[in-house]
Length: 233
Image (cartoon, rainbow, N blue to C red; front, side, top):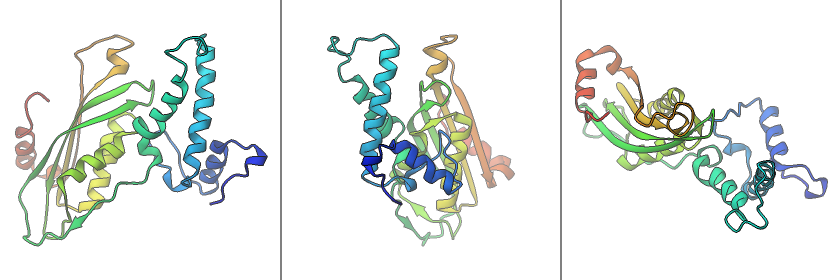
């Protein structure tokens, strides 16, 4: 990849977008595009987002010059989007240490609740909830550390998402990393696009699941997994 020539004045977002299009790679809100951003370009992208955010504040008729509370809001928001709430788009997948299943473990394993934080891709409002992951390993399954499930979940969720797609992305990633006989993912979350705006219903939650392999075929295994998840779900 070639870095842009600052003399040409081409916005870095245009440069990155061109790379993606040339490679025929999708760059939807919940896609990771880190492979198409060089290390020194993230700072340039931060500057560009800050500049655009200043324009948004101006259009909202907010005096960021005289108002001490919003002097640096554009920069703070740019950092929040690129490094935190949407960081899963711009940083590479976290390293995952995998171990062979030496003891040939073949019993149900459940990890959770993992707290997850995302944002609705429709309104950029917070989505906050819990995830439970069930794994039915086999002798060929790769064993990964418990904390790694949380890291993978955070990497997937730290993007503009809709919950139905987010759990499928997470399931696909864990399936690829562990190759189990069965995989189950359940997510329960509050959507602030529903509680903070719109109907402003503070009590509604969305719950959905993905069942793969043995969990899909074996009703008893599926019931066992669901029975072991706290009823607060």
